[in-house]
Image 1 (cartoon, rainbow, N blue to C red):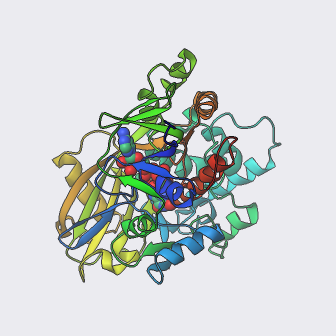
Image 2: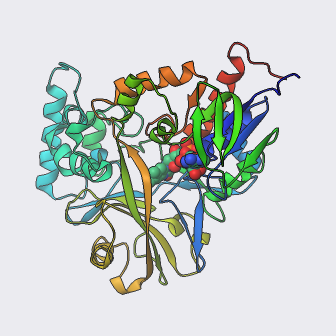
Length: 436
Ligand SMILES: Cc1cc2nc3c(=O)[nH]c(=O)nc-3n(C[C@H](O)[C@H](O)[C@H](O)COP(=O)(O)OP(=O)(O)OC[C@H]3O[C@@H](n4cnc5c(N)ncnc54)[C@H](O)[C@@H]3O)c2cc1C
């Protein structure tokens, strides 16, 4: 009897998995552990307050992805001009810090400006070996000391001298000297960064987008509440809930270490590389106030150690439907990776009042702790050799690991939609692939 044709098996139904399913023309089957699609791009609601898994603002640059979003949610996305701030030295300055020193104490501005000028006067020399060296090279000592180093240490959970600068080219704006000087004296330095404008669903949080995209997929099967137990690369089978599913190719969007621990019989060198993959966990709070926020920004960066959070955002300042009328919904990303207790909550409430996000700690009606186990991949000295060897091995087995944690990288939602499109094309272009 002829063997049933093998399908492409998609592991995980976040934006990468959804996009792969949307773009594949060959038959596919998708397994998602949770009860709904969306992965990190889901939202939750409590008492009329809506929250994402911290701020999920959509930045779009690819015309085809822009069109896809417009097609699945016609008229459903708000376009918002970024209002982002940095709070340090008791004042809120404009984002990015390095191009908006105006408003800081004069001695801080002087130190930052002198640092930039010294850095620009130095000859190029050897490439920076780590992110701390990258900051000193591009921004000088002052900006590094007052923002780049302390902020990134809080964000990544490790000191910037232990990570490389491989992740940052698109995400950290590099102003020229004229722009730094303009921003220091209060002249317009120009709007900078990948996130000057963003898009956000008018209703329901970012999950509205994931649902709309998920609603478009066809030509395959979606299985929710389906935990992928193992991937037997020798037999080309995936095991889900005890059932063996043969595959022609796998698109895995599981965090890379989770995929590799599910692959019995890995070659020793790949297992050794896998043991070196590092990632930090994020703890954050969904915070609600019954009163309007004091601040008008969408999010603020907080480099100083004496505040327990490194970034705070106000969903309802971007889209009012994220909270009941006259109220506000916030996300608070905590610097500490340990468990959240009453002392943390009291500290956060006071901190929010201190930075001018809320009027008083008593404004808060609830603060729910949440955790993202895989949040920030650590780009340490093993990163490049480990990922190169692992991906070479996986692709030799027709396993395409994609998405933020599948590709083990730092990226945004649009990158994941693009990755899904790219991997569908790669699979269909591979030798032996038959596209109907
Ligand atoms: C704190 C934070 C803030 C962010 N803010 C933004 C932002 O403002 N803008 C932006 O564009 N991007 C943002 N991102 C990035 C964005 O969330 C990701 O790029 C994107 O959502 C990742 O999609 P993915 O499909 O690759 O992975 P995921 O969303 O992680 O999807 C993987 C899926 O695999 C499933 N899965 C895991 N294990 C199994 C298993 N054993 N069996 C079956 N299924 C399994 C999971 O349930 C999940 O659904 C942020 C990320 C973080 C962490």
